[in-house]
Amino acid sequence: MNFVTTFAEDNIAHILRSEVMPLCLIDMPVIQESSIYIIDDKINPDSACQKWRHYLFSSIFAEVAYINSNQIHRIKNPAILDTRNGYIFKEFIDIPPSQQLIRFTDFLKEKTGTHKPEEEYVLLVHRPPGRRSLTEASSGLPLEDYLTDALSQRGIPFKHCDFGAVTPHEQVQVCRGATVLVGAHGAGLSNIIFTP
Image 1: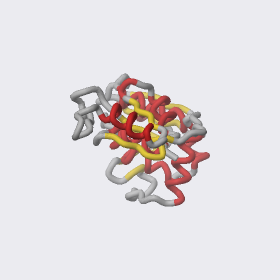
Image 2: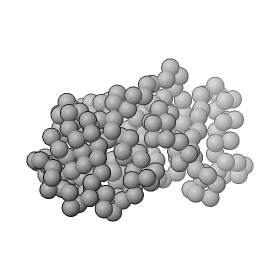
Image 3: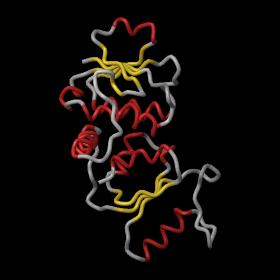
Image 4: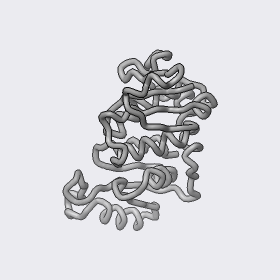
């Protein structure tokens, strides 16, 4: 099967909800044997968001290719993504937690080639100062410094990560052991699907 997406967002959360999650309605073996073509007329494939998208798609599809919209006619029997209605041959739904969704997220975790670490931990997704960075109110310390001290005193394992400074694979891997995920509002929190 050949999937085609014209979704031109550069936001991980929007890509996850509108482009990736509707795939949970499709049999996983079908996805693994299929190709996905991304119309790149309005996107920069080298942006951090598009690298995350490519990483995720290349983990689950047999082939990921970027094409121009004038090349779509070359694709045989395309299933085209309509971001309002999902992939056109399936009815789009708001996807509540369900066994189907849980199986799909387990499938994504498996296909990324990551593993769940032996030790679980609290994970803070932080950003460079000034970019929705979090501080502890009473001390003014960066939240990663405050939590490192406070949680270690309580024997609670803690990690922090700037998702903007690591690869999509590293983002997924660090989330695999996060039993608690903390962060400011942002698309990087979409990686919550890779937590245990």
